[in-house]
Length: 212
Picture 1 (cartoon, one colour):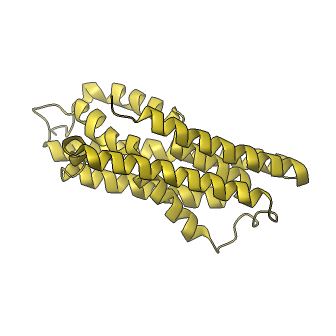
Picture 2 (cartoon, one colour):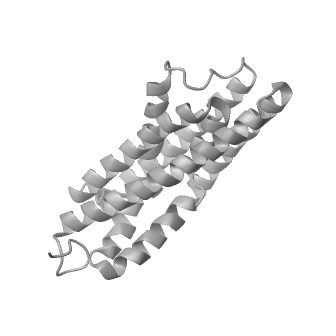
């Protein structure tokens, strides 16, 4: 049976994906902050949104849409600054929430769809996610195997799987840490710290994704 992708590049692809997903970024910051504050159910809802965003980028990559980010710099800049603005809004929302009442109990249904929507938007407005499919994924495609679209689909699905596993681990770890410190003044300080962390990631994203 013919391989759809070159088996020789699979180990390097998996290693690259793990490194990419373990690199601090907007998704990691948001999921950690949300899970520490609201628990694992809320965090996993956001992971679903992030995963849906990656799936959209994968389909757009196969269709050639994401290449517009290279051909039309204005589109990249619009995506970049929209992502930064959304993260700053999330940071402000988290800071305001630190002064409010305790977070909803883990597992409550209301709000989960909205949290998934936030995760989706955060990922769609993440230029690093878009550039992965434009600049990194094509480097693993080899002639003599499946079509470019088929190879992109296989590698993209692998990336989404690894991303979901890593994000799920972050959610579980952050939710556990949040449960251990969820008490009065300490939780207020933690929420404010997480809000500052999200804002810092927004500034880092603005610097890291600038065009030279």
